[in-house]
Image 1 (spheres, one colour):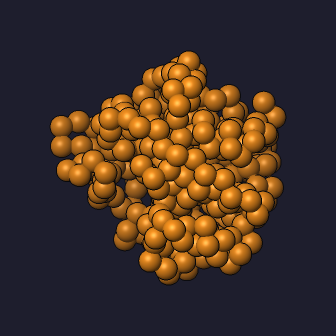
Image 2: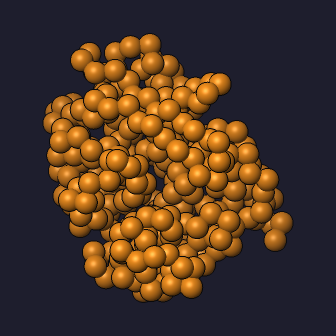
Image 3: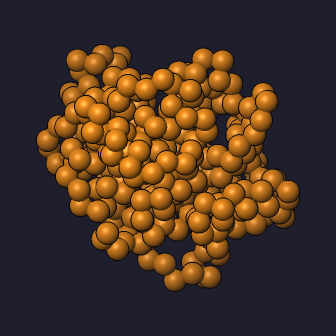
Length: 295
């Protein structure tokens, strides 16, 4: 594994379902997947000084994810998202506002920790509030490689903020709906390569990765296109599939695997998550290898 300083920036929260609640937040899920594949990741987030915050910290520690960079907030509660999985292929979210992760204090992080970021992985949701947004933009201006998981969550999809985040990105991951939104073009599978190229050229991106669910993945990397078919599984729920894909893909790319090998591994991990309950199910390298070898 090539050693790099990797920061995952953004929200950690409770996903609240009709019958249960589970730890969530795309950046936390990505950090857990990176940690699972051997990346020494710094997860920079913020939770309330409350029972919900205690529970999230306990969960991260149980998964061997360091919590020393997860700040505590006495003025704002730990975040929650209310999840509607009536349609398992089109999950809907209602996201609580003015919560702890809106106030991630990058200045305090810099004072307490001497970490120079090589890689910053981030999404759009944590940039909805000016406090977290300004801190994130500062980190992005310092890093050597910025990986943007667009992960749109209406109504928090401000065009000006997206512009700022895209302008600082090197690698971008989008799904087909996000690609259509960002290129102002109706999505057609036959046009995915030209749409990815349009996005890449507009923002001078090194890589654009387009996930399309059961229709697989298209990656534009260094001017070359790569495709990966989805692995067939019985879908239990899709919560966390995109996070699992991103964390696995980035881990493989940072470990200097070929783009095609990285896509294959990431697609297999995402399929395992889709066929399991929850965003962070337990599985082994042998499970991934078995799925890859099933073709």
